[in-house]
Image (cartoon, rainbow, N blue to C red; front, side, top):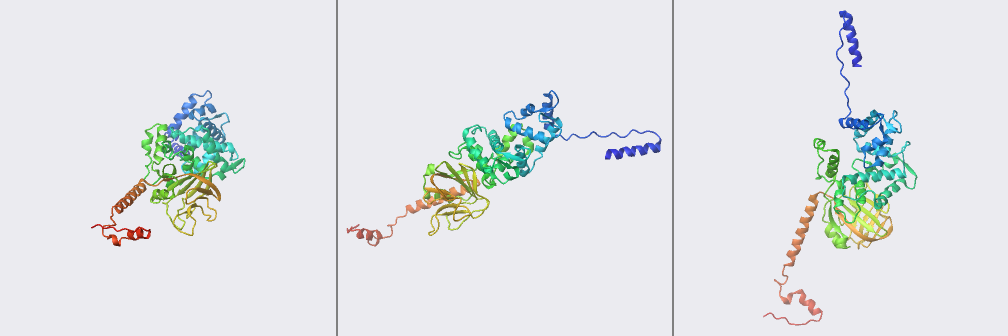
Length: 444
C-alpha cells in the first residue's frame, strides 16, 4: 500500500515539473526467517537434487528418532497445500518449523503434539497414542542418558498402560478427548516429565523403574516437582552461547528438582506404624507415598501438606491418588479434604484413607501396615515408601525437631527418681510387697 502511494506522488511531481524524476529507492522486504531455520533450510536444500526437502532429508534433522521424523514430516505435509507426500518445498519447511517455534502456551504445545500424531480426522489410534507416550519418554531419556533406554520390554509394558487407560477399550480417541487425561496431556506438553529422572538414575526412588518415575512426574502438580526454592531457569543469552544439545540438557537439568528426600522405607525401617509416624508426621511439606501390594500393584498417594494424626479429613486441592501398575489410572485428584490418617482417635476408621468417597475410598492402608485396598478391593501390603517433596528447609526443620525430641528423651533418662524419695514411701516398695516380696531393706 505504501509503495503504491509513493508511486502516485512521484507521478504528480513529474506532471508539474515536466521532467521525469526517478522515484526514491524502495527498501527490499525484510526476511524475518530465524537465522537457524534459514541455515537448516539451506543445508537440506544443498543436499537435494530437485531443491525440495524429501522425507529422507527431513529425517536428517532427527538422526536418532525415525518415528518422530516420520510423524512430523507427515504433519508438515498435511498443513502445506503446495507440498506433496514425497517432499516439502523450502518455503513450506520454514513456515511449518516457524509454527512450532511460535508455540508459547502449554495448551498450544499439547494440542499441536497431539494433532501431529493424529490422522487427518484428528483421531488418535491405539498405536499412535502409544507411540506418542513412548516418544515423550524417549525425549526425557535423551536429556538423561544414564537412565534405562526406551527399547526395554518393561518400558513398553509400563507406558502401554497409559494408552489403554485413555482408550477405555475403544479403537481410537479424538484429540479433544485426550486433553483431560493427566498423563497423556502432560507427556505431550513442554516439560515432558523430565523432572526427577536424573535423580532417579541415582536410585532416588528405591526399586522404582525410571519409566514409572517419569509417568509419575507427568501426573503430579508442580508443588511436588518444583518447589519455590528450585533452581531458576538459565537466561536466554546463556543458552544462546551453547549448542542445541547442551542448551536442552541445561534446561532439563534446571527443571529437575533434586530436593526429594526419603522419609520412610519399609525395606529399611520395616513395616512398622510407630516408625512410620516417627519419620513422617514431623515433616511439614508435600509428600508422596508409594504403596506396593500383591499382584504387582503400585499406588501413589500424594499429599500437598504434611501428614497429621487427626479425626478429621485434611489436604489441599493438589492431593492425588494414582494407580501406576498394572494399569495407569488416576483414582482421585483436584479435591481438597481427601486425606485421612488416624492412629489414636477411638470409634473412627484407623490407618490411611484417601478419597472423597468416605464409604469406598480410592486407597486405604490399615493401621498395622499389613493390608491395603483400592476402591474396596483388598490386597496384601508388600512395601511402603514415603518421600518428602518440599523445599530443603522442611527437611532441615524436621531434623532439628527430631534432635530436640531425642535430647529431651536423653535428659529424662538421667533423672534419678529415687533422689528425693525414702524407700519406705517409694511406690516400688508397695508393688514388691503386693507381689509377695516382704524384705527389709536397711541402708543404715
